[in-house]
Length: 608
Image (cartoon, rainbow, N blue to C red):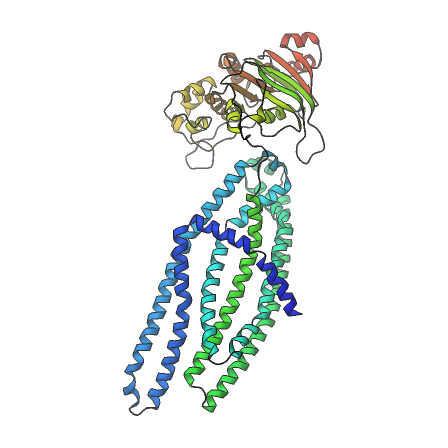
């Protein structure tokens, strides 16, 4: 029964060999030179214990002969050579151990960096739709948490496996001189350990997979309690105790389940240890009987004991290495699955070339779209034309589908049906980088880069050099020039709160910097999603007075709730529930006395 179960477990282990090969290739690519040195040192370290065992027999037998010989201690000098060699082997072992520490440290750093880059590259390349999926977050969580150390853990396990295998084979050869039964005892005494190790690793892996969501919930509670974004509301609503209690409850359950598994493993390991001790005791008793009968020397007894004892320890270590490799390979399966995610939004094989500037404009043609894992169409048969060189504003309530138009235009998503065109060209026939260079977007919540003011603008177009006057021109166009002049070190001031010596900005000031980088990009199409939402009325008025000059010869789409911003447009569309319900100029829509006019009057009464 035990043999059958072991064979099943071993088949599960061998099924992971392709993953181990992938992991080895990954490690080799990350640190090729260090990996070669590591392998050489492991082979040497694996052979040294065998020399030590043989030298021990020479020393013991030589000492017995010296004590029994006439003249006694005068015969000691011949023992000095094996003793000196033993000391040399021990010193060499210590040196190699130290060298391996240095090699592993360098290897570890390179592998971790390589894996971080792989995760970053994949995170940037995948579709935005992945961020709508809880399953994706589970995969990302496991990839970040496990891949950072699992390959290194695998390196350690493989290294120990290689070293222990070399030593074990040599020890087995040593024991063969006493008969085939000696290595057989060594193997049989460790079978229970093999079963325990493989069974525990598999149960541990399944437990971790099943509890990924709980670990993420614990992390989320911790993030709510410790991040700046949530600090004000957590304090105002006195949520600290609630989320701390949730964190403790989740962590306590995880800890309780983990301890239960550990206790089960400890009991099983205790049984395996007794079994191994019994086998060792019987074998050693037989050798003592032989030595007492004169058919074996004390050196033979010392060699047998060391070889059997070290062999058992090595085999247990080897089995633990196999179990660790098995466990690491199971977790690495998640990492490699994460790396296999392929974006659906790709450039075509033979992309069409867009014109440098639009002549006809942008069209949404019978577009239907719903977000992943939702049941409601945000757009259904939606059509709209945005004239080239015109300023078009779209207004409407939250959830009307306004921001979705921006995401479709930039190919952050593709429509389920219909098409989006630039000058009649379906944007899916254009290389994705070329399309996104055509369009610059100021999102409703722009990123606040914890970089210098200069870099906060320059990220809009990294091809612009740091001393290019276009950067300050973009700042001036966005109304950020006065802000930059007031900063302690001007353009070189570090912004945000992440790093020492930084200066934080108000929401409106951050938005002006985001506007500046949008203008620096110089794209023929500008999309502004609530461009003045974080500005006070004075700043908004200043920006609006110059807006038309900035937008000259560009096609502009403004998504806004503010009618004072919308009225700057050549044409305004009112959007509701995924469709256009009114269109016209500001004055024309007021004269129509429909939804736009009603909302305008309410905003004016409220002073918005």
